[in-house]
Structures are given as C-alpha cells and as structure tokens.
Image (cartoon, rainbow, N blue to C red; front, side):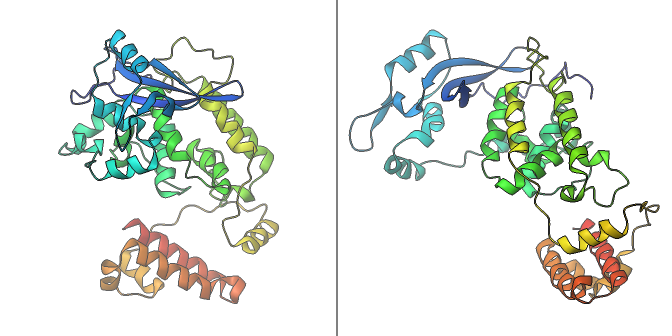
Length: 352
C-alpha cells in the first residue's frame, strides 16, 4: 500500500479533544488528548494527565451542578487550546454521576459527526476515504456486520468509515478500541483473522472462511507474519516516524493477547465440516462456476422472482436458515441439492 504523504483536511473538522485509556506497566491511566493538523497529516498531543480516574477532575457543587477542576482548565489555557465547556462535558460525560448523565441526556442533541460528510458525492467522499488503511477498513467492517467473507472494500466509499476520517492514528485507535468492547470471547480470533485478511493465504481452500477447520499452526504463523508486517507499515503509522520498529507497537500488543488468549469458534455444521475434511483432504477446488441468473436462483431457492424482490435481507436469511435445516445432509437431505440451494442463496444475497 503506498505511503500517504498527502492526506486531505476537511475544513469543517475542528481539532477535537478525547480521553484516551492507556496502560503504563501494570496499571491503567487516562490522559486528555487532542488530534491536531500539522499541515501534512493528523497527529495527537497530550494535554492533561487524568490519573487513574477521569472523574477526579470533576467537582460537584450539589444537585446536578458541576464544573471541571481548575488545574485542568488552567493547563488547557496554558497550552492555548481552543475548546468550549460543551466539548469538555461531552468527553467527560461517561465519568459523570449516573443521575447527572440521565438529566443531561435529555438536553443532548444528535451529535453524529457523520453529518459533516452528508451531501458529498461518492467521488468527493472517496477522495478522503481512499487514504484509510485496509486494516482499519476491515476492522470496522467486522465490528459493524461480523462477517468473515466481506469481499472488496477498496475502490469505493463506505459511510460506516466516516467515523475515523480526519483523525490521528491515536484517535482512530481510541475509536476502534471502544467499539471492540462489544466483541465476545469467541469472536476475538475471528475478528483478527478477518482484519488481517489471513484467509488470503488459503485462496484455493473451501474452508478459508472457517478458520477453526484449517491447520492451526499455519494460521498462527500467518497471524504473526501479518502483525509484524503491519508493525513495519509506514502507511499505517503515518505521523509516527520516530517509532521503534524493532518492538511491537503498543497499538498492536493487545492483539497478541486477543489472539492467543482465545480460540476459534466452530461456525455451526461441525459434523459436516469434519466429514468434509476426512473425505476430501486432497481436494482441489474446481474453476469458479458462473453466477446463477436471478430467475434460476429463485427457482432453486423455492420462491418467485416477485417474492424475492419484496423480501428484505433479513427475510432472505431466515428463509435460507429454514431451508437449510430441512435439506442439510445431517438431517437426511441430499448433499447435491443442499449445495445447489446454498449457491442459489449466495447469488440472491449478492442482490441484497
């Protein structure tokens, strides 16, 4: 991936404050940071050390009243940081007392920053998104939809990526780290397998999207290779030119724990997968078949073209699941018919 030495700046985005959770040795510390534009790229700087608990910088005066500690505001003035009380309140909102949060929620409007990009054409939006790293694209896609096989994300804009536009690498990691908290233990490895595109090492394997069924030593080695490659990628660390490439960067250390502290979950049909492996270890995938026509796919799938056009994506998935339960080989169904039905489903899903 080419180095991104010319990153556009959207004039509507001001330099934003955010509270970053950091690990220092064995303890967790918090720091108030700011993403800043240096004329070449977005970077970050530390503004104020918040210690073990950001709420220590909030002073309550009774009722629902509060203000921020004078040391914090004095430091921001000393650094000539342009900010408003609303900005501080927004960042410290998660650390306020619960009853105050409930009161303030009634007064908070829609703060979706994506509105800044609303109204742009796809061509204009792509000018900003084309500089995003593929690792960021794939992380956000998995966190949004949870799919391993996500197809090509390059070459066109995606609205869900707007959340990391015009941010320093540190602020991007801050945003994605908060999103990663929704991941369940059995999703950790799948997340990294997908984000690092490890399935690309198994292009001819029908099980490339079922990592639990692949050679675990190979998968582990490819994971380490890709993580080390990312650690040396100047495009990913744009704005961090003075980093030590001989050691794994703190942004990536957590992913070693994510990966080796968890296991791949079997994505259903375990007996079918085991049987497939035992019977076809030497199997070589045939050339790709041409895609079914929509009319033919609907016929195999057991619905009319009109019904298909009326169905939502969710309804199509539900129909497939019901059919799969009845036609699965483990339930006495015919294997070839099951394969045809699955191919028809994939064809119809591509249209949704």
